[in-house]
Each structure stands twice: as C-alpha cells, then as structure tokens.
Length: 343
Ligand SMILES: [Zn+2]
Ligand SMILES: [Zn+2]
Image 1 (cartoon, helix red, strand yellow):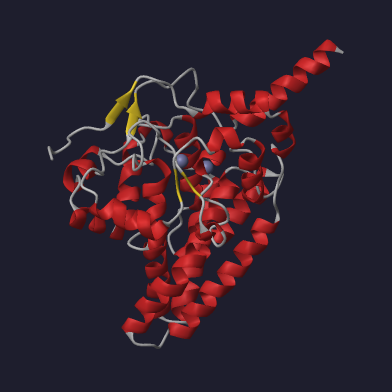
Image 2 (cartoon, rainbow, N blue to C red):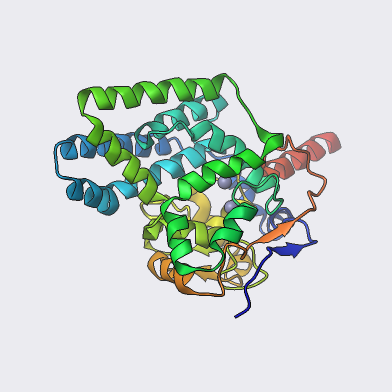
C-alpha cells in the first residue's frame, strides 16, 4: 500500500459540542447528571496509592525479572486507574471545590513518580475544546512522530513503549498553553519529596518499579490500547472519537466511555453508562471497541493504521483559548438563566 504522509484534514468543527446540544434536546433527563460530583474517586485513589506503594515495598529486594513482571502484570493496572482519577480531578468531577480536586490530583500522582498531574490538566482541557487543532490538542502526534513511526509495526511498538516520553515532548508545541502557577510548583515539590522518601526507605529498585508501572500502564501493554481507542481512525475513516465497552472499564473507571465523556465532560465516571442508556440511538449507531487485546494487535499490525490516522482541523470554532471545556454545564446554566429572566 502507498505510504501515507499527512493527517486527515477536516473543515468541520470538532464534533462533540453539536452532539451535546442535540442529545440534551432529545433527552433532557440527562441534565440532572450534569454537574454531579463523585468523591468516591478519592477513596479509589487512596486504595491504588496504598496498593502501588505496598507492591514497591514487596519487590524492593527482588530480582529484576520479578520487578518487571510485577509491574506489567499487576502494577500497571492501579497506575492506570490513578491516571483516570487525575483525569476526573482535571474536570473537577470529584469535589465541588476546585482546590479539593487539585489536591486529589496531586495525591493520585504520587506513585507515578513524575509530577505530571497539573500540567496534564492544563493540556487535557484544551484537548476537549480544540479536538484536532494541532497546536492546541496535545493528544495528537507531532509531525516528526507520525513521520518517524508511520505504519511500521515495530515503530508503533516502540512508540507505545516510550509513550510518556513522546507525550512529554509534544507539550513543547503548545506554546499558547504553558501554565506555571503555584499548583504546578506544589505538585512538583510534593512529588519530589515522595520520590526521595521511596528511595530513602525502600531503595532505588522500588522507585524503578513505579517508573515501570507508569510506562506499562500507558504503553506497550493492552492498557496502552486506550490511545489507539480514543481518537485513532481504527474502524471508520470519518469517526474521530471511539468508545470502548469491555471488561477493563471496571479497573479503568469507565474511561472507555470516551464519546460519552467528550459529549458530557461535566458528568463523573460512575454516571457515564447512564448517558448511553438514556440516549442509545446516539451511541449504538457509532463504531466502538470491545477488546483492548484485539485492538492492541490491530493497532500494531494493521498497515492501514499509522500515526497519521487522525483527523486534524484548523477551525477553532468561536471558542476562546481560555475555554474550560464544560459545554454541557454552560448549556444547562444558560437555560436556567433564561428561565429566571422569564419569571
Ligand atoms: Zn477529559
Ligand atoms: Zn479524547
């Protein structure tokens, strides 16, 4: 097959804002889910932090193959769950107070070694508002990544193996979005302190275990198929967001419900299946994934799928860069203002 050398360009605006409006019009009962919070997420994070720290202690003196196997077979799962907790906190879905969400994110960050929770928040919110806009959506591969890896199976495997590094480099292109505030500094100081404590009391091997958990949880592992699932054009050349409805939505806190999440970013993880149940005609008609293992191999070995298999757009809509990506909440609030004005 001919080598692809460009992303798929679209002139349409990002697809979710219009869906939010349409779905709420035909299913107004979804409005009651918008703005709900789920403090249980903090307790899930507490459990995962204890589990990963306990595992790190257990493997601290073991041989390397046990450390690597424990990270791949066990530790990657709570590490991924913690990223989902950080994601929930980024959307302010854990507590009402924004600062309580930030503390949740900083806490959930602890066993994944690098202070990324707060910078993730700043970039992720823009991924929602500007899906496909290359200079604002850090979820899109860089040009050099796409050119280098293209559709080679070995390249895609290496790309997954070093995914956190590629992701980190990408943020350099987001010149409009660099945020460096007191929270980013707090995240940094608390994280470094935690890392130093782990090395002091458990040793370097324990810290290396945590780094391995981080890399496997988002990389060369069935869990890493999540990146292929969310926005790669794996099943349809025009559908740019895909949900995953399968067993890993248990440990992954429903993070597979990605279309539902983009349509309603102000609804917490435990309520995402309710959106699909309320508005099945909007979700059952889309293509979706049911197996991360199947998708993992499809992504690696299907030559039709390359790092260029993404939709990009220049069109930012009329959305300002400061947008906080809560179109569902904004719609509900605008309606209640209208009702009050009419009274
Ligand atoms: Zn999100
Ligand atoms: Zn997304």
